[in-house]
Every structure is written in structure tokens, then in C-alpha cells.
Image (tube, rainbow, N blue to C red; front, top):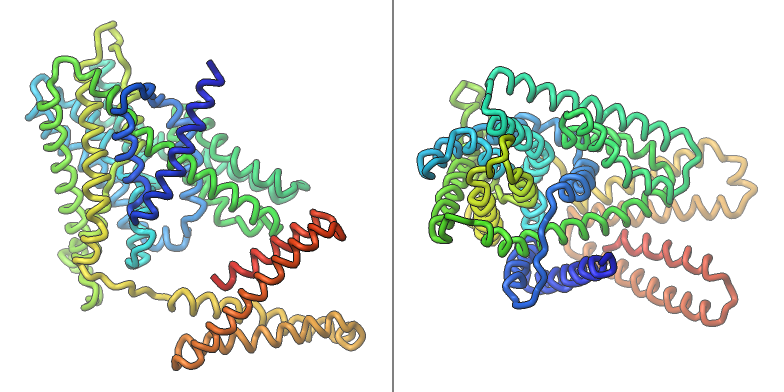
Length: 533
């Protein structure tokens, strides 16, 4: 039985890899393509039915994916754009839940207000993975990406709290708004406290104990689970624990991963893990449809699709109106800021509004609704809520995801930021680092420079690198002739690296040096090539 399950998982992974490569070939965002492909695969006769276990999503998938997002989130950017992030992650979630509650209650016979809030809490949080995947190869202002990433870090917590309070109200038959608000702030606040406490413990282990690159990498994999399980054990927000702890450790990453080997290994492992988890999650969404359809019960497919379409349109319109309101609200209250003629406020608001694609957290929340009430009766409308959630995910992910590039092109928004272009920033940073190194060498190693030829060579190499980088930086601002020279220089270097790789292969065949030393040189070549790509 276990071998069959393992084989199924491996086949799913293999399908994810093939479909992702096909998506890249077709230039379609891979989460969207995987959902569509999973949906198509699910209707093939003989395909085994695969059910998503909510505990698996919340406990296995969610902590590392949140942690990885938090790790790569800039704290400075997060804090700079904290107002729109908080307004979207909390304000929009609550506003969406309220509107969905009243719309669904008015539309669906026998649907109570508490069930409406339950549905609202389920479908309110957008999925950042899908949005980031769509936006990855599209130039938009960095602030929009920062707001979307920051919103996604927090909105899962706010929506899950709304969901749990609504579920508790349905199961117990009692609901107090004052108590719910108090419990919300307690759950979120204590989640942050627990996350930071565990992050400090992990920081001490990384910082002051004699770890190795493998131990450092393993600790980064264990940390989000410690934070999530620790908070959830005391019935607080595990999402807020992972996000707060991840942001803290990311800000201190230069201290806890002080060795280059640890950084290289951890980055490689996390890139692979995040890709595998995201791929599995999105293909499982598509594979889940037949199971959801079979459980519809008294509702016809036509009725359920009708309800799903109305709710989908409702949340799309709500988000668009809310982001436009958020963009122009400060000016209405006298807080004016300098207008940007190239990027009017409505352009960013439309992109943020259209990027509200739903994902796996919504489906996992719906699946976690219990089958029975506390009195033993069947949970009312559970199958319908599941189906509506799936329709919302499908429409927002596929329709909005595929049309988002066209929306961005239609707005004509420009990538205007406070910082210079990326290539200029990269060259400027390298130049500062080498200048500081040369200054330190001249100031503290004057005697060694006179006596040691290797240190003399190091100085000459730094001076040469400074000259090349200075010329490259100047070429980014000057004529095309110098740009051609830099391109030729990079081309020659790449050709030399290719020759060196062939020579390393020959050395391996000749068995003159150990494989370990040859691999080290290959890794160094990888790093040198990465600087030119």
C-alpha cells in the first residue's frame, strides 16, 4: 500500500515537471497550466481519485511556502508599503467576507449568515504564488509586487481566523462580535509572539553553535514547522507565527548563514522544495474536481455553477473597487501626494485588483469543514460550499491569470522606481565592495604587499576588476560603443569558462586529481558564470 502511494506521488511529481516545461514552452504561468492540466487528467478513465487532506496542506505545504515567501520579502519594502498591505490583508479580507456573506445568504435558499461568513472567509485570500508566477516575466513597478507579496503573507492568517470564528458559530449556534474581535487580535498577536520567540531560539543555534552547511539548511527547513505547530498548539495563528519568524530570520540572514557554503546550499534546497510543493498543490487542485462534483448531493451542476459564477464576479468586483478606493482615499482626506503623469494611481490599483487569484488555502479551508455538526447531523451546504470554492479558484486563477498580462499592457504602466536599473545597481554594488577591499588592503597589509607576491597579485586583480566594473557602469550611461565592448568581454569570458569546463572534464578522465577538488572548481565556475548572466 505504501509503495503504491509513493509511486503515485512520484508520478504526480514527474507530471508536474513535464507540464511545467510545457507551460514554459507555451509561455503560460505554470500554476494556471497545472490546474487546467490537473482538471483534464482527472476526467481520464481509470485515473485514481486523489483527495486533498486539509491537514496535509495546513501542516506540510503551508508552513514552508509561507516561510520561503517571508524569507525573500524585503523588510524595508514591507515596512515602507505597510499601509496598503495591511488594508488589503485585513481590511479587504473582512470587507469581502461581509459582502459575500450577505450576497450568498440572499441568493442561496437556507443559507444562514454564519455560513455566508464561512464562505467569505474561505474565498477571501488571494494566492501570491500564482500572481508572482504571472508577473515574473512582466515589468511592473516593484511597489506593486511588494504589496502583493506582503498581502499574501498576512491575508491567509486573517481569512483563516474569520473562517474559524464562523465555523465555531455554526457548530455552537452562538456568535459574539465583540468576543470574535478580541479573539482575533489575541490569536494574531500571540502568533507573532510565538513566532518571534522560536525565531530567536533558531537564531541563537545558527549564530553561536558550530553548525555545518547541512545543519544550517536542515534548520531552515525545520524552523517554519516549529513556529506553525507551536502557535497552533496553543490555538493561536500559526500563519502569523511563520510570517513574523521568517521575516526576523531573513533580516538576520547575514548573521545566521555567515558561510558562503551554507547560503549556496540553503538557496538551492529551498528553490527546489518551493517549486515541488507549489507544483503539487496546483495540480492537486485540478485533480480534486471529480470528488467535489460527486458530493454535490441535492444541488444540480447548473445551480452550483450559477452560484459559483455570481460569487466569483462579486469578489472580483469587490477587489477592483476596493483597490481603486484605496488608491484615491488619501487625496479625498487632504493627504495629497505628487502626481505621477506616467503612472496615474488608477493603473496600479487596477493591476492590484486584477491580481486577486485564489489558490490552495481556500480549497484546503473548504475541505476542512467537518462532515457533521456537534449534534450528529450533516453539516448543511458543505458540498455546495466546496463546489463554489472550486469555481472561484478556477475562474480567478485561469481567467484573471491568463488575462493579467493583457491588463498590464492595457494600462501601460511604467517601471519607475526610486533606485537605478538593476544592471546599474549590480555594477555599483560590486564597485563599492572592491573599492572597500582595496582600501582595506592598502591600509592594513602594507608590509605584506611588499613581501608576498600572491598578495601583490590580489591587489592587481582588485585594481583590474575595479577598472572593468567602472567601465561597465559608465557604459550603462554612455554610448553604445562601450556597451559593445562590455558585451564582447563577457562573451570572451563565457567562452573561457567553457574551455575550463572541458579541461576539468579531461582532468576527471585522467584521474590526476580527486573528484572532490574538481567539483569545487566546477562550483566556482558556476558562481563566476552567474555574475555574467
